[in-house]
Length: 333
Ligand SMILES: [Zn+2]
Picture 1 (spheres, protein in one colour):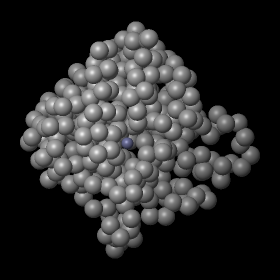
Picture 2 (cartoon, rainbow, N blue to C red):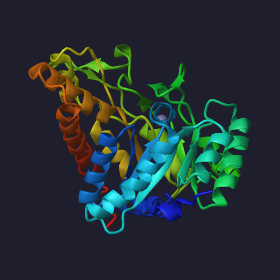
Picture 3 (cartoon, helix red, strand yellow):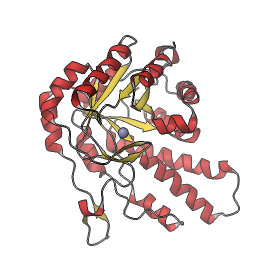
Picture 4 (cartoon, helix red, strand yellow):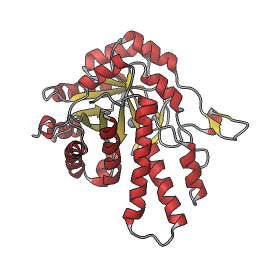
């Protein structure tokens, strides 16, 4: 048993309470490799932004759970080296799908876990989420649960049919599970293809897809019923079109990739939404940079020559998200 507190990590309780009061949101960035982690920590340390490092099932399969946890532990020390005296870094399990997995993460030093029972029948979702919350709370680990089903595919999380969270269920669910935060479905979606062309309109000038707006009505109904309760948005990449263009210009093929407009996320961050998950955008930044370098400098074969610039591009992206979308800069001095 390792407590996250010994590793210098923090849970989400205090940072969410401050974020709701302050009208901003905490970035939750997924990581799978060293360059991504360096970019996240550099951006958070320079901007003094609290940050949530997320480990998904795909990440655990790809990089190994043990290694990722030690990397997060190293990230705390790295942040201090960068001059961030009191780093506020959360290590969070993204989309935990069983009690055993959540327990193993709690026992191993994670400071926060998500139990995703959203595909289960309502009562089973409650029973599973409560079991995880009861266990995690003994160790002061915070728990995110989910109600409503998101569309899209990402790291082995996929759903054929999505539906919005039902506001009439949120009080009962949060009370009976004891969860610390609630992931809801209001039209965000996993992956780089969040909407099918038939769900969108097309901008006549640029020919680009314009996605349907998020269901702010549902969000406001939920907030009314659970005032001050932390709300989480998954699948909130914006799929920056400059990266899509760069990928397509250098041999890639991502036609009609489209995400959630950043203005809408900024709007959501001002509400009880206090955690916004962003993964695909950093994948796009990395892929676009590497494709460009491979195309322009075919002689390059030292991975540092393309992973280094990819890391710099991801850092730029994370800084932009922190300052312009989440508003979390300067909130962890
Ligand atoms: Zn998710």
